[in-house]
Image (cartoon, rainbow, N blue to C red; front, side, top):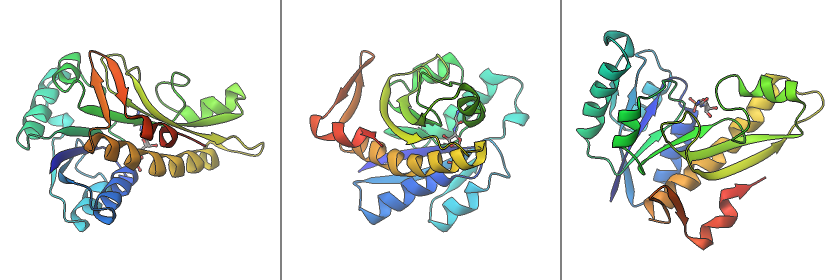
Amino acid sequence: MKKIVILISGRGSNMEAILRACAADRWPARIVAVISNRPDAAGLPVARQHGVATEVVDHRAYDGRAAFDAALADAIDAHAPDLVVLAGFMRVLTDGFVTRYSGRLINIHPSLLPSFAGLDTHRRALEAGVRWHGATVHFVSPTVDGGRIIAQCAVPVHPDDSPATLGERVLAAEHALYPRVVRGYVDDQIKLVDDDLLLAPQLWPSLACV
Ligand code: GAR
């Protein structure tokens, strides 16, 4: 039974998609904790409704990124997880933290990386005039939004899209994509070995979706 810790900062809709899939499809895995850097994160009560323990490591209580990341790592390591899932966790993590969890730390980003790393991706995609936008799940590396890409889902950009309508379409794609990736990791079908991505061939079609 694999143990998973999910980190959130806000709404937690990706977290909920993973919790639902884990329960519905009886994954050989358990979400052992949801940890937020914000005490008011809307996803915290949602996690508790799903019977998952929640914790807060408030970044404002720490003097600098290194101290916060050390406290966060202590909270995570208390659960000895096999996988740490960033689901709308909006803090840049130190190199030391990222290296500590290398190969077992994944993130979802609301764009087709390497396009539109960083914030405000839907507005920037519209301004750039791209016809396709989407979501990416990747292993986390010290370069922000730069780790090995595991899976991507593309959505069309409509002529009348606003950042909000485009964002809704991308979020729906995220909810389809992220649980698939976490399940693949749980089943040992996704691995990072010496910075190379190893994927089970039967997983390939489901990791590139439209
Ligand atoms: C999601 O769109 C996720 O891709 C994005 O934050 C949102 C969180 O929504 N993450 C990032 O921008 C990370 N750089 P959620 O809290 O409802 O899952």
